[in-house]
Length: 316
Image (cartoon, rainbow, N blue to C red; front, top):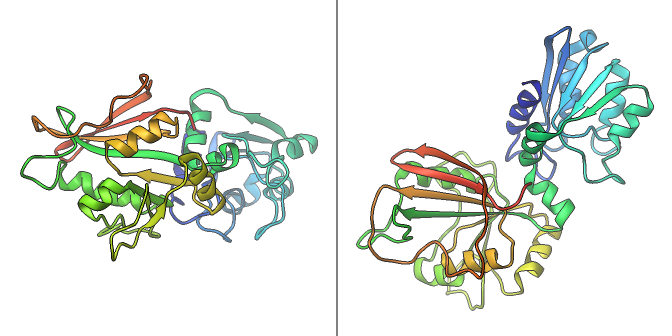
């Protein structure tokens, strides 16, 4: 439960910590939570430091639960491992390892060498801790952004509604704008650009930042379009985007773009909003694929009049 609380705290920084990861920390002594903290924004104290400050002297002899391995480097803030050692924490439970052993990682080893009992969790808590920072981890481990494919479909799997503009309801559309408000980039294919001239910005929600807005495919872009055209190979473009700071990419295109990414095994997560309507005709979620794509961790959530299906192609 305490690791889950650390992850909940970490999520409070979503949209404001970029390019840093999300981190939450909880300090427990004698079975009582004595301090909590999370990384609020770049340059602000890290989660561990905030939690230790909240705990004060009660941190001595305590156990700290932290969603990501404590850092060891001097950046805009001092190393969190030093703060943990100075506070006298006896045990540290880590949700996910840092994939940068030569830059920020190595905190587990540093703490163990100093005599601190360190546990790195496994199973479901570890998965949740990694999912919290799926984009950040993907860039460091795969050299590409974490790719989320979002679509709205009718109950019979159609992506358009004859005679109507919207497939899903207002609540589902608002959820999409919230999502745009924290991902680093949103993309569609050129077919969607020509048909709909989408803006792809986050509107009518409290967005910490606006995403980069991309179009994959061959140009030219229509006159007046504010999208960035990406005409290279998908793997090459994703590597370039990762090098340019894009950690999370939201795909909102149609079946052609979705199928291209799925065929290249470049989709990590699916978000499909299903409307309680039978369209009877229209394009489907994907084109014919060369092989089935096995999904895992399927979850359903009611969003207004629609149902959101969430599933993963890859683990974070």
